[in-house]
Structures are given as structure tokens and as C-alpha cells.
Image (cartoon, rainbow, N blue to C red; front, top):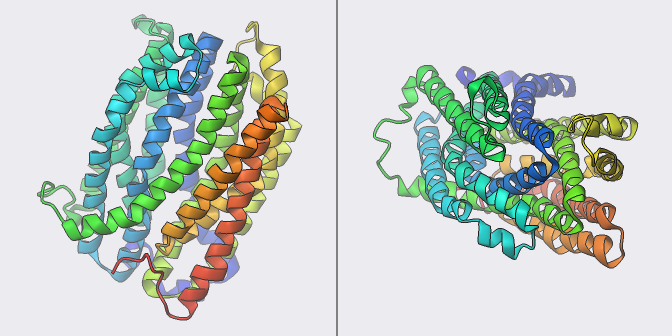
Length: 468
């Protein structure tokens, strides 16, 4: 479908051509992820300027929010490979049905997730967090919960647009959201420009406002640019067959995301057991590692889109070359990150705190060690998310979910606990467990794509999980 950016010339694309195509499609996606990440970084920096206790509560509250959010985002991720494949086949009706039912599932999940956020305090208490930090985090979540509905709808529509190669608008809408969030945080956390000083509650209000602005922008763009899809015409009409297909593909993706974010959420809880200062250092280190991870995630999205397109055209040579190049580009980004984390750790950590913060030196001392561990898992973290992207592109999600769950929960979390608490390495031990879990996932998922799923495709067999 030339109208969606696909060309038969791609069938004969060289590795250099793949690198160029991945860059053109991927740079806006990477920029969009970085802009999205800037929202979280802005929250962390400004809450850190407000107080260390507020920073710790913000880390705890946002981790709780995104654990629930990313599970629901599985339905949005499912839309991307399905729409990419349907666009390659010229199936406008199919891609509309897919996106609509992705929206249905996301909205339904959001309504189920909100009570867990609004009444989160008993859960935080059960998780053994400091009472003062838990109280602040629960207050944050009572407001932030209302943002999960627009956030999930935006995720679905971004996946729909990205699959149609409209990645630049995904970038600009996210940049607009990041600017909105920064301005709202500055006003509401600190009471600037005549606004009330709300502390952590200001960050929560800013978050809901930001997600609402993103929703308006992405809906208006989708209606204006693709009116032929009539995305919201008779939106209330059910499509049970497509609902099942999106659910079948999206549920394993959501569970995989939940397992991965659960690995980091568990590490956050363990750092919370070590105290407020280790938790604050952990929050800063996670933010820095997450920023660099956005490069790999953007490349993973490109791998999903291009593998989905090749899947729709049954072009396995094109798929293999594209997968090789995406993996190589991810490795290159990982090496640059390793140099950065080992070379400038104190400068990076200090940006998240004021000069006169009493606990500044303690946080930096802990954070330097954590960034060293983050540098170690750059290679394996990039490899595992690229593998997941390629597998999603060919709509193979169930077995990868099991592999990811085993790697993160049966390997990563126990290793974090053993190294951190049983062997007494504290925060470094907790993060070493992350390295082990992510390394296990990268090996298993790469093996799954190349030795099982792709090998099956070359023989003419579709993955067992592909929609009928």
C-alpha cells in the first residue's frame, strides 16, 4: 500500500536501505518516547526540588500507576502489528475494526484499574512502605487515577497512527504534552504564577491535565487525516469477533509488560525497605536508565511495524534483514549509553536535586553504583525488547509472555532479593538481580524469534497465535 508508505521496492531493500528506513520511521518514535519520558523526568526533578520525601512518594506512586497502566497498554500494543499487517494488505475495514476494539478493551480496563488507584493506601501498607511516604503516594494516586482513561486511549491511537507511518505526529503530540506537563508542574507543585502550592498533589493534577491535552490532540489529528476510516462513527457498536482477536493478541502483551514493570516495581519496593534515601537514589537511576531505554523501545516499535508489514506480504527475507538491522542499531545505542553512565554518573545524578539538599551526597554515592549496574544491563535490555518487538510483529505473543514471566519473576526478582538482602549487597545487589533477569529474557526471546517463529514462517506456517 503506497498510500501508507509501503512500496514493492522494499522487497529488494539492502541493509543500508533498511537502516535508512528504520531511522526515518524510528527517529520520531524514539523522540516521542523521549518526550513521554520527559514527563516522568520532569515530575521526578521537580518533586526532588520540593523535598526528598516528596520525591520518594512520587517514585512510589508513579511506579504503582504505571504498573497498572502498562498492563492495560497491551491492547494498544496489539493494535500496532495488526494495523501494520492490515495496511499492507489494503484492508481499511480491518484496521478500523482493530483500532476500535483496541479502544473498547482499553476503556474497559481503565474502569477496572481506577479503583485500585483511588483506594491504594491499604495496598501500599501491605507492601511494607514507610507510612509517611505511603500516605503521600496514596494522595497522589487518588488524583492521578483519573488520567488512566485518556492515557490508554492515547496509547491506542498512537499505535494506530504509528502503524500507518504517521510517526511524526506521534512525536509532536507527545512534545506538546511534555511542555504542558512541565508548565503545570512548575505552577502547581511550587505555587508559581499565582497557582496554589500543592506539592505532590500538583504533580498529580498536572499529569491528568497533560493526558487530557494529548487525547484532544491525537483524536483531532486522526479524524482530520484519516476521515475515510470513520474511526468514531457508531463507536458504540460491538464487534465481537475483532474484540476476541485483539484481546487474544493483547492480553499476553499486557501480561508481558506487567511482568517486566513488575520486575522494576519489585526493585522499587525492595529499595523502599532499605530507606527513603536509597529509594530516592533508585528513582533517579531508574529515570536515567529509562531515558536511554526509550531508544531501544522506539527501535522495537519500528521492528514491530516493519515485521508486521512483511508478515502481511509474506516477505520473509525482508523481515530477516530488517530484524538484523534493528538489533544492530540497538547494540550501537547500548554501547553509547554504557560510555555515558560510566563516564558522567555524578553529573547525571546531580541534575535531579538542588545544591542545598542535605542528603545530596548520600544519594549520589548510592546512585553511582546503581548507574554502573544500569550500564551493564543496557545490552541485554535492548536485546530483549527488540526481540519482543519482532515477535509482536509476527503476532507471536503467548510463548514470549511465558518466557518473559520466567525471566523476570522466577529469575530476576529472586536474584534481586538474594543478592540485595541475603548476601547483603543492598541496592547494588537488587540491581544486579535486574541484570540477571533481563539477560535471561534476551537469550530466550531471541532464540524464540530466530530458531522457532521465524524458522516456522520460512516453511510457510503461520504462528499458532496468529488470528484466523
